[in-house]
Length: 388
Image (cartoon, rainbow, N blue to C red; front, side, top):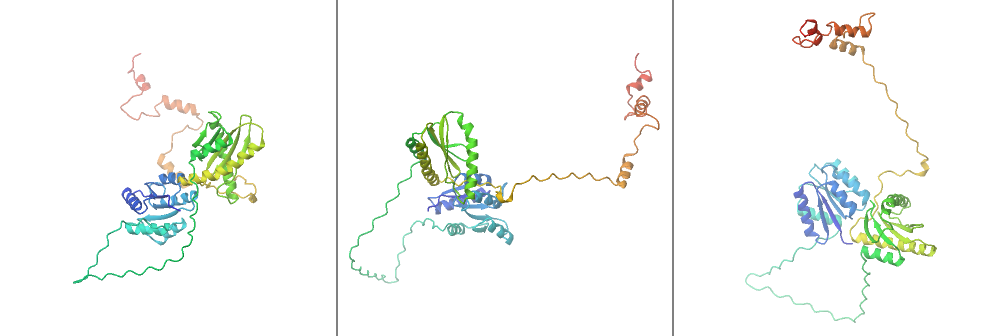
């Protein structure tokens, strides 16, 4: 199977571009993509099928090892080569093995070593270099003798050459497949959605403009549940179709990996027409998956990173809230030291109310002003410095 895409992730742009150019020369018919960050790499592997990922460990944000772990959730069969400038100790080699890397290379890496490592991982020969003219050997003082041509064997009795296998018919385009599906069923629309609910391709129009906003979220939630059940049944790609008969329209929906195929049919009685749409959707499900794969798009559904609890474990109870621990009481020595630092604050005398204490403190001069050169309004009035 020919290579589709190689992805290179390295924050050193000159190094990443060098790897990219080297691979473009060795594999001219393969898409070689370079990105400088793990976040951009996640966009690529979510959208396209990647055969080989060459990744550096030290990346801005997410590390290369964490990136490989996340990518394997989406594309378990991807091959990985890790390149790093870190010291290649046993702990680093162990981490590379745990994430499933085929090779761990230390920088700097020569172009010849890099190409030979990629060739060993992919198991594919790179493109041959341009042919060079053969050197003419000359003997000293005389001409080299010509080699006699070996006699050709007598032709055997001609045998009938086997007929070449009939090539498979070319796949239609995505638009052609949806158009044929719609016309064969006499439907109103055939629409393909991605896992975010956005339209990837369509033939025909929605029954109403606001219908997409109303039903797409619920449809995608149902397809996500169907994908989880399919994985539990041992089928990575769900092979299922569900239909709904309504008054305004009939709906047939089929998951195509992480995509969703919607068929809107005219509402009306007739179980035969619904059964025919069911079978056509099953056939279109496989054909559209092949078309998307030939386009280099990643069809595999993205598994949830949350663990699936088995039914045998029984109902899960909510964890009990943690009891709040009381704040520790300060030690007497700490209180005594704090009092010495702050001093004893003035307070009401024995038998004196709090109101009387503050009234005396204001009228008397219990609280002198911070600046002795400044008089309060009451002090200036008592000294007769203010007019009547």
